[in-house]
Length: 183
Image (cartoon, rainbow, N blue to C red; front, side, top):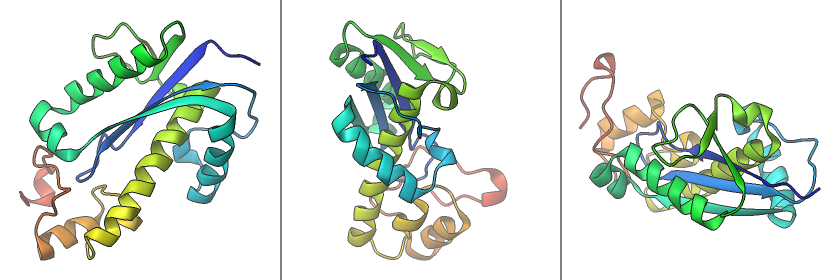
């Protein structure tokens, strides 16, 4: 199977800390076990990611929290999509969601659960980001990044209250009123 579809998905859009990670993936063969990364356990994602490394062509784009704060999340997504578009020139591009950030890339809501190449991209983005956040956990102990990966869990919010912001904290992220103002 040689696919002409490049699936694209992101991880980290809604986190309080860490990077935005966007992956584009073209599958070289069929995979029965693909699913939206959110439906798989961390162990299953790692197992599938190992297979994808040799059975797909992919690109992972990272925007750190400093660039997210400087440029805005939408601009970081747009630039990521443009980078993937250039890398996968000649392929049909499909991004999970309903906004293409003025890139001309086709979008589909829930594509990560419907289209294998997008499912693969979701796994690649999620595993890549999770590995990085686990590494950051060793650099910034006490925040629990290995567990919550920078998302706004109670444990993460309590760590910020106790320790203050880490260098990975997004200054541009606004908490809901009931969560209070941490930044």
